[in-house]
Amino acid sequence: MKPETSSGGLDGAVVLVTGGAQGIGRGVCESFHAAGATVVVADLDIDRAAGTAAGAARMSAVRLDLRDPASVTAAFEQAAERHGGIDVLVNCAGLYPNTPLLDLPVAEWDEVYLVNVRGVMLASQAFARLPGRGERRIVNISSAAARSARVGAAHYCSSKAAVEMLTKVLALELAPLGITVNAVAPGLIEVAATASLAADYVATLVAGQPVRRMGTPAEIARACLFLADPQASFVTGSVLDVDGGFLAGTALPPS
Ligand SMILES: NC(=O)c1ccc[n+]([C@@H]2O[C@H](COP(=O)([O-])OP(=O)(O)OC[C@H]3O[C@@H](n4cnc5c(N)ncnc54)[C@H](O)[C@@H]3O)[C@@H](O)[C@H]2O)c1
Image 1 (cartoon, protein in one colour):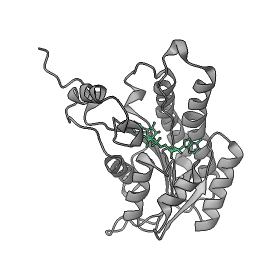
Image 2 (cartoon, rainbow, N blue to C red):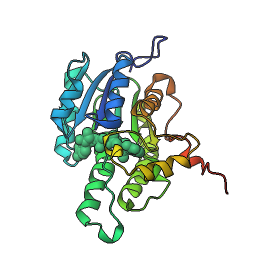
Image 3 (cartoon, protein in one colour):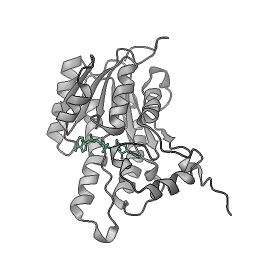
Image 4 (cartoon, rainbow, N blue to C red):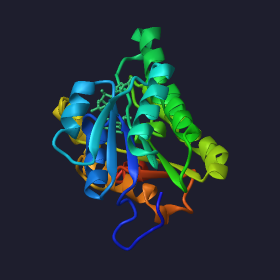
């Protein structure tokens, strides 16, 4: 990564975003691109990833299946070869099905862990193994669900708690390579999947938040931009909550 400049530290950086085809990941791709970065949209859904990258100079797509170690290695090698290296990895891809414990199939538990936890480890490993060119950054997308339990989300909540601890362990292990590792924990964000949530569920949830609305992918991207910036070089092993104050406590009066 090139040293900080007054015109914005991400200008010219190469950024790979897992799950970049849609939702928060797409917002992250667009914001890094607007900041002058070269963006690789890495996703299982290659058609959608290609659609996200279409028409934008400095954006391209690569197929990545986080469940498959060979696919992860190949995607990072291909992206690094295309751009002469990768400076920033945003681990955004994640699954969040909702199934009560008593009905939870083992296969669904395993799938969530394969993508949300092992996938983050494999992508970080592949990224860290690439030859570095100065300081590099990993930003993991966690969730407020890592620290606030939710009914039907035993797999999801515990997988995101694992992502937050993984963030800290990787911060320790990768510091000697000049890689900082941080996480962003979003609250409820407006994407296609959350648009189909029941209106009363969303209304009840946001009514207890200091900021009484859902967040946007661009607001999560803003936090990623900060953590990826060369000026954030003293920040590592941290989790930044971007949740409208959801985790701060309940904003409803006790009456
Ligand atoms: N939307 C929210 O309210 C919210 C809140 C907190 C945290 N998050 C987290 O943010 C991240 C993105 O969430 P979103 O709502 O944008 O999700 P989304 O479903 O809109 O997008 C997820 C992307 O990940 C990709 N993906 C799925 N499996 C993959 C695999 N095996 N390999 C590679 N890519 C794969 C999908 O194709 C998709 O493009 C997730 O980690 C999620 O847990 C979301």
